[in-house]
Image 1 (cartoon, rainbow, N blue to C red):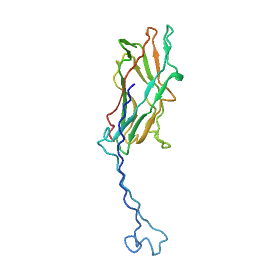
Image 2: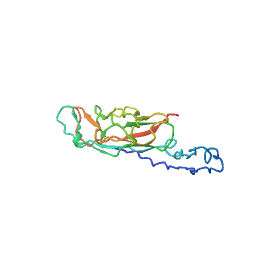
Image 3: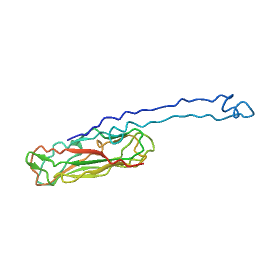
Image 4: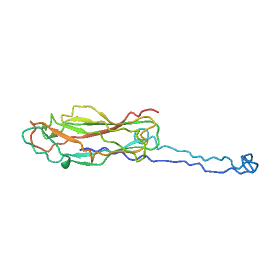
Length: 207
């Protein structure tokens, strides 16, 4: 399987100095007279990552390779098992501070072994809950359940979506626990079958 990986965008942060204004200058009315307190300011400027990287600064960092292992044909329709299925890497998007939202799509080529195609087979990507490690941030909801036909006839389909001003940080959707499945029809013949999965970061959702 094919894994699409795009490099991190660099993060630049510009931090303005913190300062207390002297009681003898701008805030003299707040300090040193009859008041027992006063006000100062704390400032910073946060600068998002370079917009020339990825999709205007939002980067698709990695996507999973899926190996369904060996599936024994028995004359009927059969399915992959979780025990025999391995998933390498997570579906990961990095948004270093941009307000625009984003979408990740996937599509597949036909699952083939030489001249044979698993025409009636289906690769199913289940719903999983992505996280950016920030408690309470649910701006990116569960991934979409996607069914990819073995014949590879389906177009690109949305998998993971973030709204404008959401999906900020590093978001990981991990398929290693709730695993993808492969259903194989009864008329399938033996062989080592492969499909290429193309993952794309597309169409930023404008803030």
